[in-house]
Length: 444
Image 1: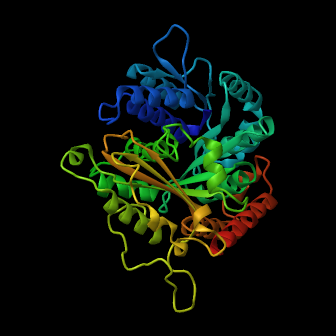
Image 2 (image 1 turned 180 degrees about the vertical axis):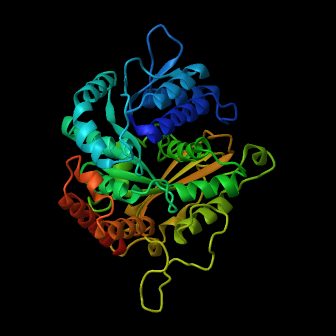
Image 3 (image 1 turned 90 degrees about the vertical axis):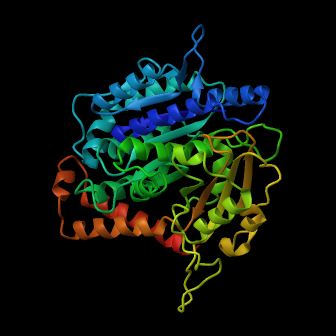
């Protein structure tokens, strides 16, 4: 099953380029710990899912469409891919103009979106025709800016119209709480509220969490967007690279299967990914990993709603309540555990079937799924990823709604949006939609 990646805006294109590089580097990895035959079968599955083999050429082409209103990032991303010599982007599957959206969601959605729709949809259709079996689309975008959020939202709605039966998963980069753009919370509210109507799932990546991982776990002194993108792509790769529910090595984590398990209700579409271990390359060779320890830490990361293994609050236990009877620990609707590396088949994951980890109306046997892959990933002898549909998005969602509403109550910067065709009612609709999402997640 093949998946088409739609890269939207500056952030989406940079993340997309890093994602394909991470995947291609994994195919060529030397520390794979399986037989040559198994490694080749794995590589073939990866190529079929993410790349297209061009007849008579050694270099594979990414199954991707690139969209940005400025050409600089797309040109640089394509050039870096070509220089790497392992893969490239398909020719003429890029759309860019000479003027951006000025961090204005309305400009991207109401102006640029309708103008680019026909051309971009033709590119997507062309890419879809190359797939023997299309499982769906992975859209990459940021919530803070104008093109990725505004144009990205419009393109996602167009994808749903053009491919009504295909799966659509969005990976969104959540802005820093301290702020990158003064109107970032407006853009985030408008983007999320619209995506909730069209996407099957939204994978949330918070910049603040990603930054801490780079600083504390990877020991990076001067953190760049490339460093943050590498963490994002490690998370996405750990989810999407082939894995199965048994040792038959037949991939079962295609987009449809993932969504079927994790998104059982249309009110609950927000997913988070936790990984363990995460460390710098120079630290890996001096470290040893054991499944019981890794899985114990990963479970506590889920319970305490921690983004990384360092600094976990071990005082929080599954089933804990506050004196007023509200939930203290993180509770889930569904969890998917993906284990990669040595001795995965015999690993005990029974602790993830604890009913206290799940909302009262979820059967743990149905809410939990385990996938395995004996082949190592990203130089780790053993590594795990936990993809959850849980209460984790409550805090960041609450933050952007409150910030955006405070600005909207004063009508700050609203004129910048209405001049491009957005109405104040559109803001209200966005707030109402996300307040409902927030209320639903608080019930878990």
